[in-house]
Image (cartoon, rainbow, N blue to C red; front, side):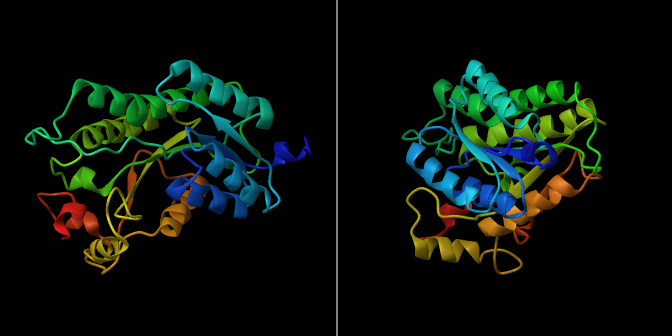
Length: 268
């Protein structure tokens, strides 16, 4: 490892970066020259494969396992990141719990355990990691290149297009949206806080490729977001020092079309 190299480079800590959208964002930052802390939960094999790909861009990277429902493991994740790279310039919370529930449906009711799990992973973990990052940055000098560190919370276009599907998930993400704005006020001017809300981006659950393609076209633009669209938006936010306390919707206008069901249930 080139120890001195990490002092001049920018470093991103990305939760849920082993596969899917998190992986695409991690690779995009690596291509742009950022060092990467790749967090994973259970996907060790995928994480190690992604780690090799990231290092192929000539940057430094580590993979760190942590249970995001554990406050102790969250602290350990951040501590390990700092020990290796000395500071974090961008924190992206991509990991989330996403399981179907709805209060009116007896076969998939909202339960206390679902509410707790969604709150721990989708809300508490992002807030606690942001808090750790802020406390560390308080002790550091400002970067000489003008970059203002940022936390980016992956949200969802349905937060301004509400329906009761995925009830616990939506509730936790709604709280995270509010937390994002509150943290922007609380952490300024040391650190920024920004939301990034994708539309339908990758197939989910039992959705087939054909169903995904059809749903992906159901926006004013005739397409929603791709994984690369979200990654490019995240990198833009990371470098845009005047953006804080707001959410950027990257969804082809999907949030403009009201719906009483989640988009995947409108496709047969």
